[in-house]
Length: 486
Image (cartoon, rainbow, N blue to C red):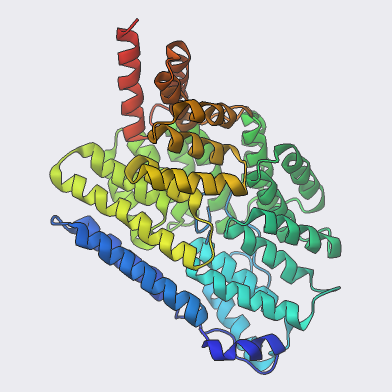
């Protein structure tokens, strides 16, 4: 990546080479090496956690000083970006596309469209690689484009800024940039998708539904279909969500689109407890793209829910070796912890420590990582940190997932009376999630609402009995205690 001394030249548009391609991966590569070492070490001590955080903070300093995701370099519930980076062929090699854009910009440094395309491609690369250190690089490329040509005629860069803001979990900014981009081009797929994502994550579901319908009229295709299906799922309309995804899969042509939609169908089946169907969908996704990480992660969760713990561990180890994001790290840690041996518990602690390292990298890349931090810390870390992070996330967005995280953080902090309204809000839209129901049931039990707690915990286990190895076990134990107290 270019040194900071090139910043002014980039802004003025005078003969600056685009960022070099290989540099950013060093940060994530270091985190992956720690992940591999953690999986195989049997003598893990606190020095490992300190080392992880030191690496993360050092990498963060390099990121900010030298200028080099997230769902997603993060673990939000919204679908991944999906809308293709302009200038990169559909289904093509993203790295090769970026290198081609860089070569073009070295020859034509005032090509504002090329800079916009490069910025959007970096956002997409951060999403697919789980590398949030790409985001400052994307920001500079997009700002360079806007400095060369703001408006009218550069809606592409505004759409790129919308996608970048959404990836960083700045959904208010994403909505603003998406609206500005759509003023210039109402049919811009990236802006339409970012607008839906922003409204979903802000908890403005009625508006998100209208935005998804508008996007469907203007730019029907896989990125829009998957968002439309997700909005319907959030409203409790699982049947329509499944039908839309099925039609999208029938119309998918590239391997990337097949993998993307089949994975979404797998997630939907898994969340409903239909683990055999989930495994079939994930198999189809992996037949199209054997390295599709969301499908591998989904398959691991379905394997664990189906009783194949060894297969689940092996699959998740493969995932975190390539992309150590909070979701798979915590899932792998819980599988280790569930096995119960001393060595496995040490491995579990190592995975949870890696979440802190990723969080430091994400924040250095400008990502608001509080939602990821809140959930991981609530279950496997510091309750005070969980509550701080959950409150920070709630201050920025009022989605059902943020409400659930805040409810759970309040619960583990012993503030159940405060937690209950948020747990109810998380389950109020019609969206059915076993983890939400489990959290609500445990909070209801803690506040003396035994009848409601039995109903919520039973509903969680009926909906998806394998939603979490540790959570499902705790739900069953709580139900047994509630029945014994009758």
